[in-house]
Amino acid sequence: MRLQATRFLVLIFIWLAAEWSPAQSDSDSKEPIRVVSWNLENFFDRYDDPWRADERTKPAYVNSSREKRLAQLLRELDADILCLQEIENRFVLQKFVDQFLPDAGYEVVLFEGNDGRGIDVAVLSKLPVGAVTSYRHLQFQDAEGRTHRFQRDLLRVRIGGALQADVFVVHLKSQHGGDAADALRLAEAKQIAAVFQQEFKHQPEFRALLAGDFNDTPESPTLKAILQTGLVDACASTDKVSYNQKPYRSRIDFLLMSPALAKDLKKAEIQEDETVLKASDHNPVWAEFRPRNNP
Image (cartoon, rainbow, N blue to C red; front, top):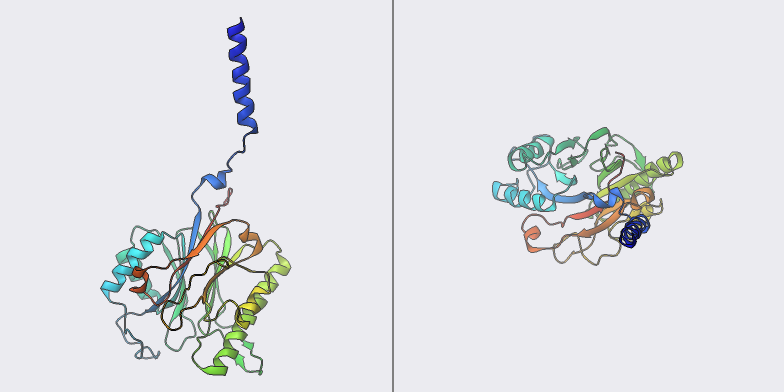
């Protein structure tokens, strides 16, 4: 009788311990969702586009050896969402995916933007793609009253599945061009801020990620204009750089999260290594998020 009572008490203890121990949530036990932003540096095809000033691009096109290096790095990064910059067109990107990443399950999203050289922004997604918006025709003014459009595009892709967020990709005006370039880049930043402010006004819990090459540093007016909306820099604590060429090594590529999405951030970093240096003049920036339980 005592033995039976002892067994009963042990079973009760085990049950209580299981009930009161901190349980791991379903989202924590699942694989995180990884998002990568990467400027692939002049990812051009071999064909001259007579309507674009692509003939001055160096290198003139992405050759097969560089494609193989990029493909290997992309496999190692193993992103669910890739936010890419400096892609010439959908054709060259789709061909690359079909030839070098055929089993990755990526859907290609790219619109032809406004850039004179023909470099565009794009998204590759393993997760379901919903509504897609291009802001390439949106007009706005700089501080001097000059009218502009985005230098490339502001691409917006609704991602479903386990992320459930709107992913925006941007490539702001470069540093080349002096004061005029700075004014355009700041105007682009302020227009992006206006887009997010409008969304936050109607959706305080708006889940969104702004990714890309901002061609400016964290303390610049460009970034300050965007961050004042409440977006959160996923890599704010890193001391690594994203533009990897001397003497201009600096952090100019960002993943900026809405506060609602930032709650799901697990970790973020910039990948710095020798293999990246042989593939692009930018380092990839990545972040991992807890998956949504009810996608």
